[in-house]
Length: 235
View (cartoon, rainbow, N blue to C red):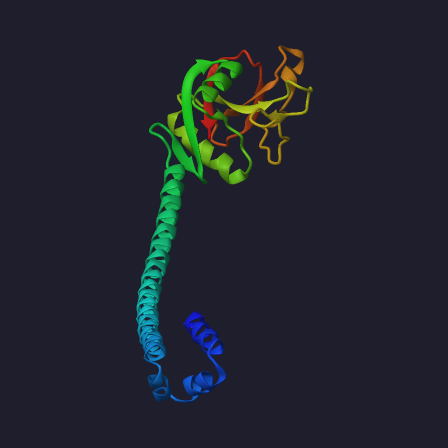
């Protein structure tokens, strides 16, 4: 539109002074020159059409912009709703994963978020350790009196004689007299040794591996690692 106005201004500037005055001052003045009037009339008609076209373009653009704005708003609303659904699904997955982790496989027993497997076949301490590792577990590591009592109640249900024992992860293979857990080589923070234990065999065969005596008290004992007895795995 501004280019049309500029064109008409330039056209008027090239007219003789009297014609210029009549062109600017009165639309009827141009009738004295038919050619001039025709040009003026065509320019005014073109200007009107151009104005109408601009109005249509602005109206259409405004409608399209409003439509796009609504579509974006609807998309944003759906995105927020879907984001909430995704967050809820993630939370559900976490709950399921927690429940699955909390469950123990068949043949295992649960206590305080840990699973235990009791085996009473006769094996050495090293064989017991290997069997636990095959099951992605470790020889039991006892860290509290409550855990020790629970283990004692479980093993005594299956004990054939009061003198039997089961291997635990206890050992002083790295340094005599300093018992640690095979699972992570950590020192004992809780212990329940039987009276006079550990005694390293009192001069007999060296006793470097720890077991739990099935005597109803869940007392601990050191024994030769080659001794064959049952064992407990934990994971």
